[in-house]
Length: 510
Image 1 (cartoon, one colour):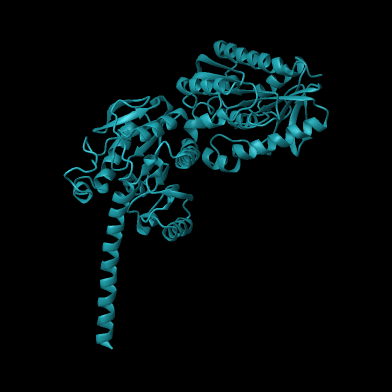
Image 2: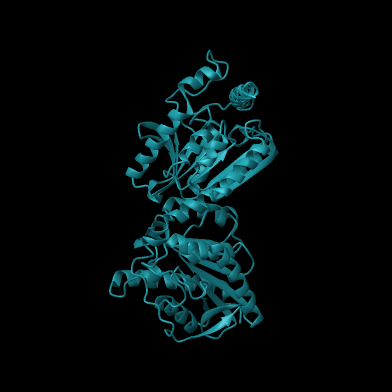
C-alpha cells in the first residue's frame, strides 16, 4: 500500500508540474498568436492629451486632474503610444475622469519581428515589475490631489491589474482579455472587478471564467463577467478599423469599462463627490415649510405649490424634499404660474450628516436609477391629474435623475443644476431641450467636460444652454448661506435662468 501511495503522490506531482507548463505555454500563445495580430503603429504625439512624468514613469494623460477621479489604463505589450489605447483614454477623460496611461516598458515596448522573442522580452518586462510600478504611479497621483482611482488592464496589463485588485490602491478594476490570470489571483481580489473576455481566447476559456465568477461571488466581491462572441483576445485595442463588427464590440467593451468604473469610483468618493460641497451648510429640514401642501402623487409623497396645467418637477439633492431653500424655489415657480412638484424620492429617509451610515451606504439604498423610475411614475400620474406639460429640474443627485429623464419623452424641457455623476453618454442620449447650470468650483463637472456636453448636444441638434457660474461651489443653488449676499445673488440668478428656460418650452401649454 505504501508503494501505491508513493506512486500516486509522484503521479500527482507530475500532473501538477505538467499543468504549470501547459498554463505557461497557453499564456505565451495568448501573447503571441492573438496579441501579435494587427500590431499598432506607435505614435508619440497621438491623442488629445499630453505626456508627463508620474511616479518616475512617463505617462500619457488626458483630462484634467481637477476631476480628482483618475482611471489608470495599463497597456498590452505594445505600450502606451498605441493610438487605440489613447483613444480609450480620451473617451475616459470625456466622461470626467483624469485618464493616465503609463509607459511601463520605459521606451521599450515589444516589437514584432525583432531580434527578441516574446519570452525574451518578457524576462525584462514582467508583470510583477509592472505591479510595483503601478503602485508608484497611484501613490504619485494621490500626492497630486487625486482622491479615488479606478484601473483597467489589457492583455499583459490585465495581470498587472488583477494584482492591483488584491490591494486597496484602487476602488474598482476591469480586466480586458487578460493574460496569465489564475484562479488564485481571482480569489485574492478585494475590490469590485469586471472581466471583459473574448470568446476566442485560449487564455480565459468560458470554463475558467465560470470558476472566476464563482470564486468572486463566494468571496462577496462585486463582479461582472462578460464574454463577447466571435472576437479574439486583444480585440478591444487590437481591432482593425475596417472590421465593423469588431469595432462595434470594442466600443461596447469600452462603454462597459466606463460604466463599471464610473459606478464604483464615483460612489467610492462619497463625501468628496456628493458630499464635500453638498454637505457644506446642510439644511435644517422642515416638513411644514412653504406655501404649498403635501400630497401623494404616483405612490410618493410630494410637496406641491401652485395649481396649473403646466407642471415642473423638482428633483432634490440628497437632503430631500423638506429642505426650505428647495421649497422656496417651488413657491416662486408657483407664483410664476406653474404647478411645482417636489417628491420625496427617499421615502422619509434623506441623508443625515454624521449619522451611523456613510454616504456610500446611504446611496446603495437610494440610487439614481430608482429615482429615475419613480420620476417616470410621478410624471405619468401628473398627466392623469390633468397636467398637460411637464418640465423638470434636478439638483446634484437629482441632476442625474433628470438627465436620465431627458432621454425620454416624459418632459418638454429639463435643467440640471450642479449635477452629480452625469456622463457624456447620458448627455448623448438626451432628447429634449436641456440647460446645465454649473459651478466653476465643481470637480464633478469641470469646464472641459461641460464643453464636451455642449459639443455632443449641438451635434445631436438638441437645443441647449450651458452656463458656468464663477466662484461658486457644487450645490450653491440650494446650499447657499442666507447671510452670504454674493452666494444668494448667484443662487437667485440660477433660479431665474432655470425659470426662463422652462418657461420657453412650457408657456404655450394651458
